[in-house]
Length: 229
Image 1 (cartoon, rainbow, N blue to C red):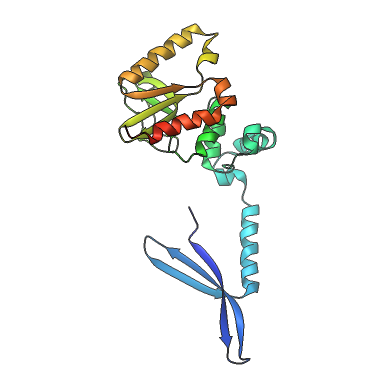
Image 2 (cartoon, rainbow, N blue to C red; image 1 turned 45 degrees about the vertical axis):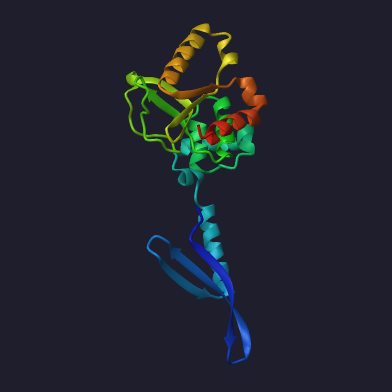
């Protein structure tokens, strides 16, 4: 969302010297209330304004920016220095970053999360579906924060998508994870079948697919999203 402040250079006629004088016009607007406030200033005033903004940003900690504890701030800063997923992420110092580092369950989920954020397709991570196949929260692009009765949860979907009446559940585990855990594979197959009975589409991706074929995964999700049937 763009900050509703605009600064433009303007030229004013000076009767005294019959010349033009350069000033800067700062405009603040509020679109909902449809009001606008303007202030005309000199270059020196604009430079002071710039310095005040820079000082404010410099003196605002990451903990304050992200609304996290100081302990969490240290964890985030460590990730920024050492973690390969963070290195090229565009969502640093946003609420998406907090979700990625503290709410997701594995590096595979984090890789998928970063890739999905670049698609601009709306989704919800770590989304619980109850035993009746109903969503436990109102669909949102942010993590839910309303308490839920865990006894009634059928599954927590790694990434949930909804478009109209169509619903998609994406999991980041699949065949590679299940090869050494047939019991878990059987449980997940039961969940898959129940979700499909409730009308959900279910996709599961292996670690190999996520690490080597992320573009194909994103393409498949986009195809689902763009499918009108």
